Length: 250
Image (tube, rainbow, N blue to C red; front, side, top):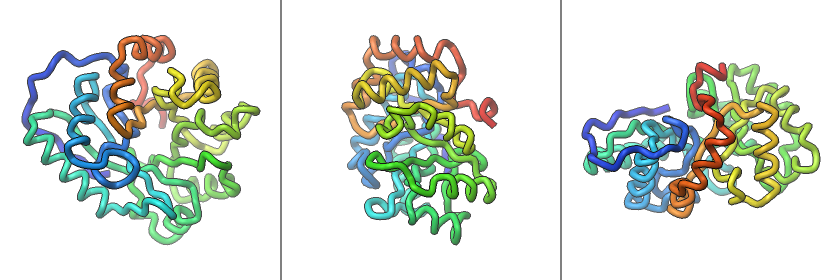
């Protein structure tokens, strides 16, 4: 994970209440995936989450075989561009980058042949996801190989996988496989539909949530994160628990 500390401070309004100091899942790097298209948008997103109380953000652009074959080189180049823009704008936020890896054949090849190139969220922890269309057929084998290679995987937004909505035992199975579970803030307010909201609430109720994230892609997401009524909903489910502190999940 590439990291950098901005030095100049921006005089902004008092931070809001998003309940976390670190966002471990976002798509704020310019021009890499279906997130921010340009540096101007990236700056608006960063300033927005700063004003919500975020002081550290780990950008996680998609790595998907048939869509976004991002590499450490492309990711770190975009990160450096955004870091420099934040310094110029006076936004005092710590920015770093990892990736959100689709558990597809391309990822399996990376794991087998070039695992040193996998970008980590923290220590040995990497962020992974499945297709929304269908579950990963060889998920057990991938989870076993990840553990064998010394990785601890996060499963991004399990509440959004509709094929789990008819059998919540799948969430316990993911935990048994060794996945940490990360829920999106926006799932709790119905943004992805009632099925995702119901599943997210179940995950919190059963104490299965290890991490939370904005999964922010664009300004519409930011506007929803800024709404006070939405923040009140998140406070209800987070209940004062400290999330995104990796000393609590290792």
